[in-house]
Length: 600
Image (cartoon, rainbow, N blue to C red; front, side, top):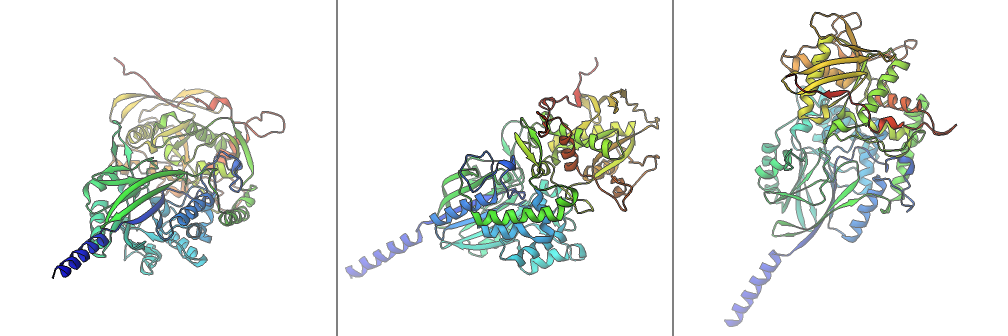
């Protein structure tokens, strides 16, 4: 009898110890990669195969080297994921609709699961579906997640996207078994990201809190030990320095999530942000860092032991086979896109003796890059196009800074890499519209208002000077507007509603579309009716796209990044026969928005 009791006790203890067996899990993660397959800033210094202390950061071959090393250290217990916006940001995106290159490459580099972000919809849902189809034809691709996307069964414009869901290439969630651990993963696109996805419709996105609760319930039913959310929603600090954002709310309001891997706001966390006992991690953007989580899972409980944001730099051993594929893709970019316009991917353009930068989520007013780009567009349109009175650029289209060194075509494209037009050249096309002085004031007022709450809307002007009262009432801040013409003459703009004089404005097609919708978006409070040169109101925004060569049939579009490239080429070289050098005047350029004291 005593022996039976001892055996029973032994079995009970053994079962208890087995139930509490610790299982190791290592997670590598990135977010907001934005097609930065090459190390950058500037790319001319990138030498992934040589440990020569080059100053560049990022590069898929280096990331693949990190993944391989971690998998070798942790056989059978590593998981590699991305939290969205893996596309859009470099010249590599331009051939994605034809080749589906990047997703197949990410699988070869070692990625298991990739969430969708707002910029993955920049080509539209049908084109993105085509990208994934072509990628899957090249070979295996990571599983693609989008947990709160809602398609429209009655609209054929997302049929190809719906077909990918039916075929299992896109899922709302998945379960991966790693080292005996059932890991549930789902993804979300948050409200701010949704508002930054103008080409996603008819695909829409449900609210993240109810969507997350439903997805967690589903994963619990699947018997998951750990639930991870790849949330393309974001976190940031408020004016008081406190962490806020949609992913903070997600952690606070949804039970059952063990880890949030955050994206969208390009936030770099060197250690996890813990909210309501839920760790939130994020590693900036553009492949500058790879996050590494070393954890133990005990009785379905995830316990983080160590977290590291691994720098992706020259210390990393890059995988040659990944880099070789990237170089071959560069050659295809040359053949299909750049050679026809007289360029190559690596062609040197100019020298930057200092950093020309911006901070979309910081103090946009301090950017010297925005001023340079606005001047570049003004100069390009007046030198090679139909001319303009004013050029406008929004902070949100500035994607990468210009770092010191020799700038190539690839470097210049990265500065303004978003959008596409109706030709074969990537990037937003330039549009031109005419408005009255009163409407010009309305535009400057609405941009002052919207940039106060979203720094991505902060405007940079060329040949326009605005005096404004920061303490002025709603849509009543602008005190004076001046335009400087091409000869340097300064004239004050008459903003009286009865003055019929028209002023031309050039902006990219996306911003022009939004200016044309000001009246609708403000429910008639702010009136702007874009016109042609004769004063006729134009409602079709495509009619504002400029033609840079009337002699050729169709519209020969101008691009923002080409404007910048051409402007840099006009600067003086440091020595005869050398490359142009960005002048010192852009270190601290004169600002167009000038705050003034309120009259007493």
